[in-house]
Image (cartoon, rainbow, N blue to C red; front, side):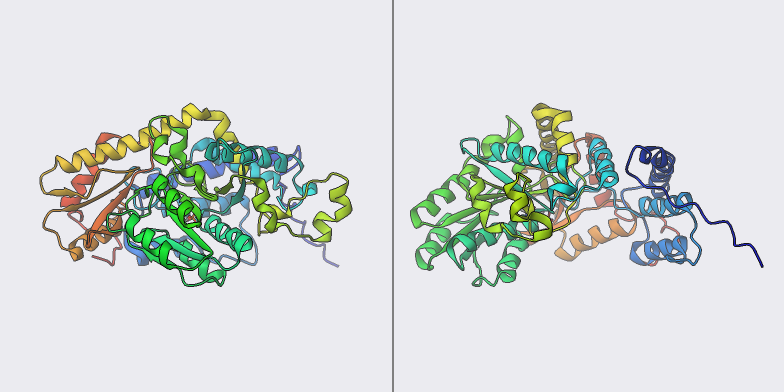
Length: 473
Ligand SMILES: *Cc1c(COP(=O)(O)O)cnc(C)c1O
């Protein structure tokens, strides 16, 4: 009879008093791999384009489900290094295509604790303290949006998309099948939410100057049948513009239409004494979308939907005996199921709570102000660089620019060349009938030198020699 091989030790757990001791050496491995991967990348994104990046990843990864595992150290080192090396890293000041934020280190550290403790926000007995913290933070943030309301509240979401869906759902529950009226500048998730909820085909009001045209909105609201829901935007995806919120709220009041404001991008201007007046009128909305994984420097996900009165959320109430039995609720166990359409749900509020406490209102305002100032500096540089054209001064932190005389094809080509060579991540946006390069500045550490380096790349988007293994031009 042969003796069985010694059993591998069971992989340790992250929680409990013993979890941290198991985590600490693994974290050293993770942090080393993050650092080495970023150094190996040598830029804001990996060079070589999709084929080269995929090939490199597959070569490193080997079989993802081996018969015999490689062990924690090796697997963490391999994949964290591969991902860091192959990332488009928003912490690099030349990674400015999207509302893709560089997360704060303190928020990422808090997220580790969320993973280790793994509270699930669908019932109190899975998240006793986390649910109390969530209630506190959501009420506090909702009060920033609705300072004069008596019972403001907010739901935690996966981002602007889910917040916009919930806003439409709540409007439908209040009034039946609402007719959504949004600007042509609105986020695509709004019309998609109308489709998902089986609402009438949304009406898009022109936004020729990047914001909703008020005359056209007035006409639409006069012509359309009730119930009506207007969605305005505070920080558009393409140009970062803010719709004229007070005038839109006036029109909604006159036409008995409800108002939702998508402030996924612009919401955190509320923290800044310099910029908050630009959100005047926000608190006249029936619901407001916020997204702290944009101008709030949180790791994904950190969305919110704020409402002026917690009673507006009652339509989401739902009962499942194993999570919120009536007698448990009557005995005082908080009923959490109506706080989301999801069931199992991460305690995403922890990183936000840590960030709000660590930085305070002033610290957040400083980050907002610095970020907006960096975008203005970029606009100044564009204006002062011969051969470059600026679309407009930034409303928040988005700058559209193009080389003078370039065609739309040239613009698209410059963007892809910079991507392929791993030199810069710029976005694209159509405005005034032309294609522009888009820089969405979200990194408060951005310096003038970084911005000069970005602009210098535009006249020479390809390096003199192709990177090794490149298959794209
Ligand atoms: C980013 C954004 C969204 C979508 O948010 P996600 O977090 O990506 O789901 C919706 N509206 C606006 C204005 C946005 O900027």
